[in-house]
Image (cartoon, rainbow, N blue to C red; front, side):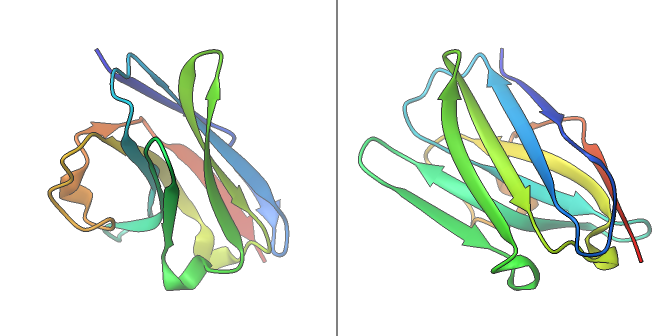
Amino acid sequence: QVQVVESGGGSVQTGGSLKLSCVVSGWKYSRNRMGWFRQAPYNGREAVAVSYADRTSGTTYYADSVKGRFTVSQALVNNKNTVYLEMNDLKPEDTGTYYCAVDDPPYNSAWNRESGYPYWGQGTQVTVSS
């Protein structure tokens, strides 16, 4: 059974930094795409950044609004797939609940389609004040 658990949210001022972590337990596949979506109050869930991993290479995708400020990466930590989101130069519009999303191949949708990810964490809150 796949379990997805996020951590690392918090409150910062404009220009600050946070690093989110997501640990995936029970993952049986050598390939994956793992990343982050966010949801602001009264808005739908939007894609932030996703990392694709296979045996030979990785690819990352970012929403235009976070390019140059956020970095998504993966690692194997204690034999568990872990995905990070390093967020710098945070802005009030980055405020929201951040969700970790995980998918196994074949990938049946574009990287930024919420419906393409079957596994989700419970979310972690990020608040950026001006």
